[in-house]
Length: 157
Image (spheres, rainbow, N blue to C red):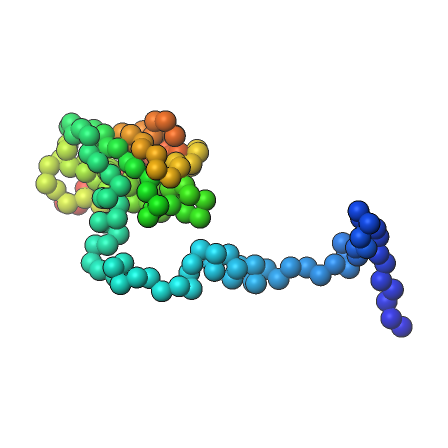
């Protein structure tokens, strides 16, 4: 009536064969991942103000040079924009790409309204915490080549 349990010895310990082992609960694993990211914690009041995110992204960028159709910036990876691996967060990468590409378009088209029509990012390697990287709009970042941008900026008429 009862099914037999089989066990094997691995390193002196008894373990059940794979088909008899209890499978981890994927929902519990997902919740643990979200807890690790801090998604169940309340944000501080300072994060709940107008343009907080734009201010945050501007705080990591310094404009080095502006020419028609080209902008060179230095990006400093600070802890405020890192992921749990202490590397630049992918969302910050996308936000920097948008901000710099729109500014670059304005160097050629003047004070027209723009929108970012499409953006694609390929992550080649990680930019580590407290590292300064020089970015040229439309090209890879030198020294830590972690993104390659394909940016299509559309004009609003």
